[in-house]
Image (tube, rainbow, N blue to C red; front, side):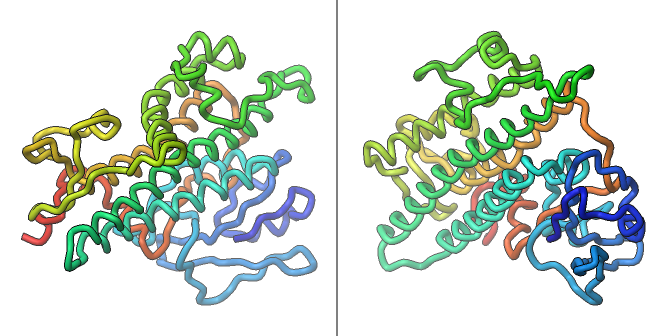
Length: 339
């Protein structure tokens, strides 16, 4: 992955790249991921030379990371990454890029968490207690990772707000400093803030204030789980094995509060599919930056695309599990997969 400052990039060199359509970076840096030419099925992977030119690596194929293409190189396993498209194409400023790659790393970790769930659910332990401890640990990790993920996006949001300037004086900021904690944005103590409160307190455009309000309820659920685990030592969930798959008890909050429990995801005696919960939590987290970008884009002008018509995709050894999340939500029982 190459990252070049605006002053380091020669426009004539950029024009040599087959996928760059706009060489006017407007103060942005160039994030240069691999490019996949879908027309001929060919990869373009570059390294920089000391003289500021690019050198293509013949025959190189990325195994893990992000890339640009008009369509996925491997549709069954390469995940469309909306935030990546937005940042690479329109918002690749120096302040944004480090936050962006933190989010990229978190998405890779979500794929790994799904893989670990897959392994745990297929273990033949001599006692159900072994599976219980393994899954409880993974659910604890995932809950804490999602809570941190909210703050990663908040820090990216903070840097995006810094970029909003007045039309008549580009040195003058429109929005104030935002807090680095997502909780500070959406909560006043333990109470959810209203859209009017958020818009007034942080001087935010209404679409962005509405974004924070819409995320507040789910964020509070995840935050309450994190507080229960980290501060009160409460187990993540009561986990059991049924022929259909792993289940957890829905007899009390917070698990019973998630809006996914219906005849498709429940079993008798207040038991719910653990796989459905994993899929829901990760799907919602993956869509979080997409919802933020759409709110931001609806009210803030951004520079034109650097590689028009191309989309960012993410891949790693387990990214097929990210692509497959919608099918898991439709059929959450691993026992039925083996039937």
